[in-house]
Length: 212
Image (cartoon, rainbow, N blue to C red; front, side, top):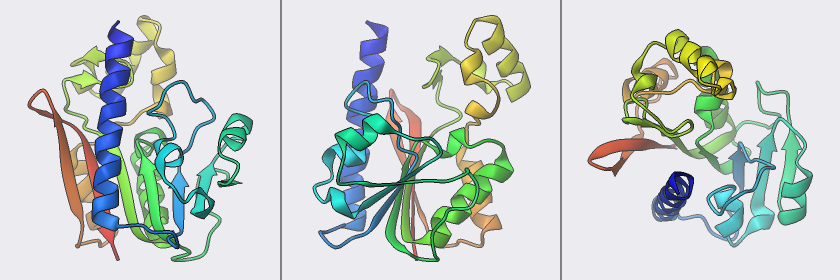
């Protein structure tokens, strides 16, 4: 029951973010979109939300680090490109929009997150990314309350003790709004929008939009 409740909240939240994406960036039949962080695992409607809902699938390029036969079968119009996980294999401003939903927290350390953000900005004229709020009371991946407030090394130790080792290490490095602003400052990005998506009177996640 708890799992179904969490899936329902996540799917509704992604629908809300998708609608905000359409409103703010106004993509059309000619817009070239880069989706960074698709997955081959497709267990519920909130996964691969862009590909499921965007009408002009042939204009989407999906970038990932592992082959995805199920994804390719489900979305044959989408171009799939694989890379080694650092610099994107695209030219500067090759895409109109980069979309990345709940991925930056999974790419590794702060330096790797900074590189990830810089590559999104380099390869696209506008970016739309989302990430969970580090200070939301429930950690959305493990569904554990408050333990993620601890320094990461202690949180990781607890995860290993309770059998959730999969969520430790580079799998998850949660960001606060201050972390996001620090990255933008390091990249000399001054013009941006950060939207707070709230649930239960607390910010559940952030949407970052950069238009260049």
